[in-house]
Image (cartoon, rainbow, N blue to C red; front, top):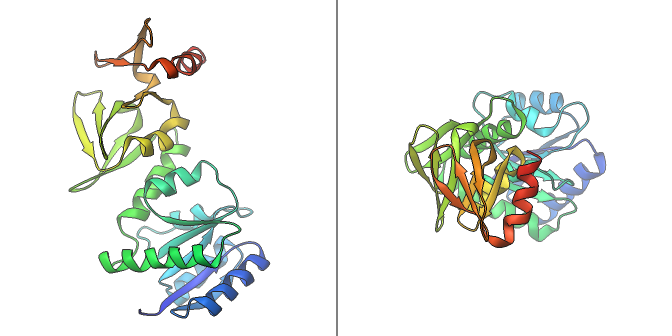
Length: 253
């Protein structure tokens, strides 16, 4: 394996030292160039040393790890996130198959993350391409008023406003997305990953096969489970076991 030149970004010195020790003792292909404690320091070191890989803490004072990534038009390195907080941001990380380590992590978990890094680098020689860029776009989905989502297709990424999505329908390991303009898009992600990403922005999984945008629901038809009547005229079945939770959320929407 080729040498991996890396830096560690973490506001806690003991975390930097612990990870540095693990890498030095158990990961001989990794060279730690520096350990820094803030986004500004990280930007300066990256510009100076040009690492291949950055271990990036998510939660830091003043600016979090995502703010570092936003400073680059094109991200010239790969990232393994490290965090003690398993919260909404991890949905976007998982959605884009980026690596993260939940503190405290073991040597085995660290080695597995590096193994996946090597595999990804072999299949994609240029760092900082689609996964990180798609991740940043999907972070904005959770944070901005004018929300867009990056959708992976066989031809690349399609960027669409979230509120133009009427519903998502499972088709095995793929998801078919229906838009307000009646267009459809088949995306190479399972429905569960869209559920994890979009639940916080007014989407609800009413059925094993259906995730709907509550802002695009016109009415509800009563029944054993009932049906959600959507803005595009479709009736989406609500499963009996999800009905009560769905109605609670719909009533307080």
